Length: 401
Image 1 (cartoon, rainbow, N blue to C red):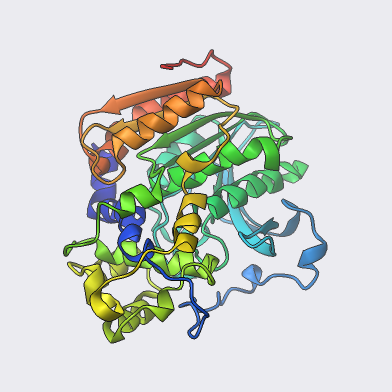
Image 2 (cartoon, rainbow, N blue to C red; image 1 turned 120 degrees about the vertical axis):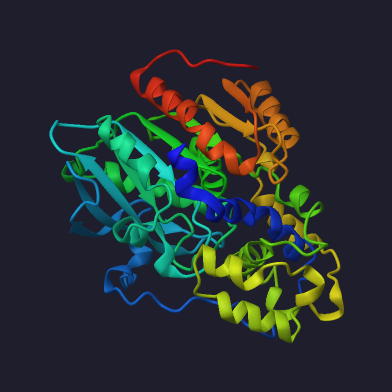
């Protein structure tokens, strides 16, 4: 299938990112910070600079708009800067891209969260969409061809906090608020579906569970999430002790999480000289560069003393970014699809999450497909698209509860 060919090896790295995060993050010791997190270089585009009065804006309030030539024929493209909130409760200037098919008064909305596995700000969807580098470009084009507008947020935030799923959920909800707030975007408060795979599914699922308390005014009608890493700590305990070709992405997720939780996940305090060099090398990199830089390393290669001691603060931070640990459930219908042989996001954890949501009254449909985490991105596309179309058309939602 063309989608699988399009994604290839790079996708496999992206999906593993959160899984391998474990190896490096789960043992962080919360100690007084003597070294700063490895932050990205500032974005050179002035559009991304936060305004001085950011604190006075409301969540989801539009701050700037930029009209751009759409990479998809027959549609318009606008880049939107809006106000959101980070994990510490501080205001941030976040960015999303809205793509709207030509013609028609209003369009239903798909909020698609890509599996963005990067530390460099130039790797964000709002850049990659226009350079042809977004690996899920084809899926977005299919939605536009069906007459659906597509919201594509930079859900890793202004510091590319790779691995911070709860932040991704918050940014996603505020991006939908921003897109729906102006008649000029031709969306309005129309029915909206959340969707994503792997890291994008993490942000999408977190948006779904946060919506009842954080953005109850939104007209969300469904969630499609594939290959979802629902429990970071559980994944952390199964990977990272031996050399792995995708270790770099897990290490990068540790760098990203420290950017969001600098006092709880103190990676910079734990690294040996090799680890410092690796973190410094990849702090501005995109997926393939990160994979190449960390290929076949293991945790003991990059930390002082070769191992990390467990710490309650780090475990708590991981749990705050694990949707399985969230006490509530989506109040919209949910599709969870998963590869039967997925070793990176264990099917048992996904099924346990589905059962928990079912007990809380959510209509959940689970689909287990043949294959592993990498193959299911392609084989799951028809199921995801059908589910999105059915939710936007108002068809009754199926349930396997």
